[in-house]
Length: 161
Image 1 (tube, rainbow, N blue to C red):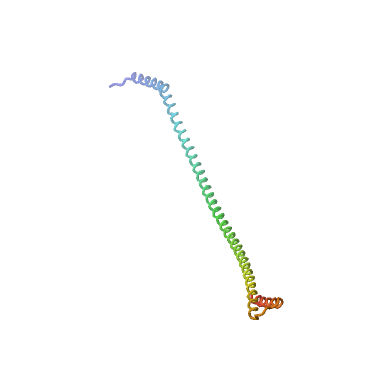
Image 2: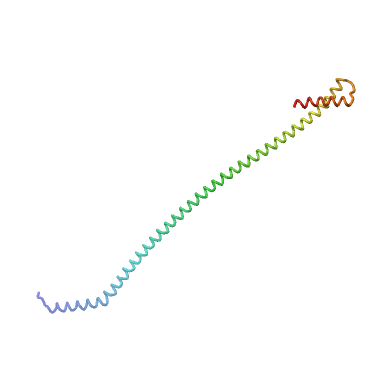
């Protein structure tokens, strides 16, 4: 095998022409497609990063909203507890007032009944005194003597109260 330099030159020239044609018609569009692909991948990476940041922001907002809702719920529970306590105190106060009013009314009723009973007792005692006195004396008393006798018995009954 011998070396022919002409065929080497032809091969180099053919390679140079092939390289020129490939770079003009194949490598340019291929590199453009590769550049577009690189930009697409880089855009998707940036979009993924933005999405991750948005998710983190939304997550922190949700945590804040959850904490706010939890605090509001605790405030509502505390307010309900205070309201219930106030209502219970108010009910106890009203019940005590009502009990005092009922007690006073009962005491007035008792006093009225006592006075009625005493009045009734006095009238019965005076009637019985006159009856007893007239039977003991067995005579007809005049009006003045009878009045004195009634007054005397009334004083005795009134002093025993």
